[in-house]
Image (cartoon, rainbow, N blue to C red; front, side, top):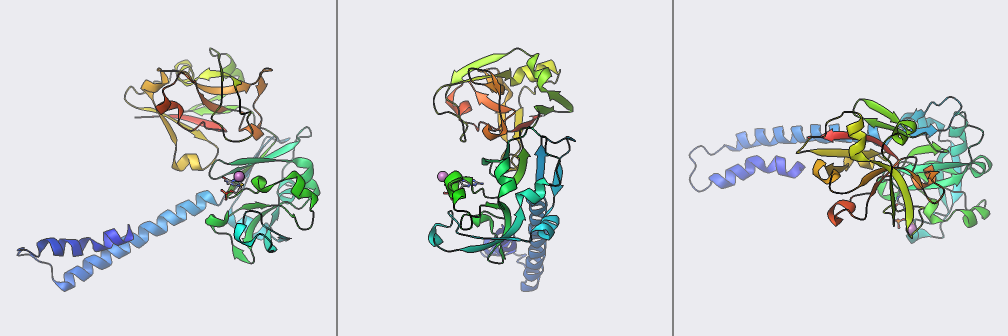
Length: 335
Ligand SMILES: Nc1nc2c(c(=O)[nH]1)N[C@H]1C(S)=C(S)[C@@H](COP(=O)(O)O)O[C@H]1N2
Ligand SMILES: [Mo]
């Protein structure tokens, strides 16, 4: 991008070589070139700033006695990150025997600032890319399982799982290795969910809770699911409401030529939102799932709940190969 813009004046010069009368002078070229470079630098700086602000906030939410959520920005976490965990890193496969010095904030220190409801037993970490992993609350109190922001004194690059990388003190507490394997080491954590959040959906200007969703026509599917983490691999029962019924009940018109955007908690869904065409919503059952299994249980955070997106196996493949969004939070229409 940087290069493309900067080269534009040169490209013009090349095109004109055959017989343009108004060929730019070297001086003019240099002016254009500098302008292009300056404009690019500005765009890059702005994008970087936006991305950093968005990506480097860490949100803690879920079942608290006050119902409030907490947000920590990069600066606040820097200040809190005083704990050192010296451990091997199972995801650093080229250095699997090396002991690294991770600096970060123990999850327990973050949770202390949050009035955890007494019945909560687990905590789910959601990552930028929509990955999620769940740990027992008891272990988080007992061990210095840490959100690391530096590895051997250097900030952790995105490619290495940064800026917030969930690390386990394997070397000091080898028993943790039995309980939590490499799949629990979560890269680029963006949200910590204590227990499971109450079902709440934003639809345009409306907020819809689980009780309201329960009043809409209920649909049951029984099929294999497209979720990647912690769901059974065989056929599973899913219960919920059709997306199109949600819009109808709220008297929110669906744009005939447009569609719907389904956003989940992971910031990934902001950059690559799942879009469905209005026409597709009437082709087959596309559900907002509220319960699952033989006992119609609520969907816990460890399975991406309380609200998830599902596609009936009757849907054309083109549609059902969309992402099965977990932690669904918002539906919006798009022209
Ligand atoms: N954010 C995030 N963390 C993650 C994953 C992921 O896809 N996203 N994969 C997990 C799994 S299944 C493994 S085995 C390790 C290594 O993942 P990799 O092979 O993709 O590096 O990271 C774990 N942490
Ligand atoms: Mo994995």
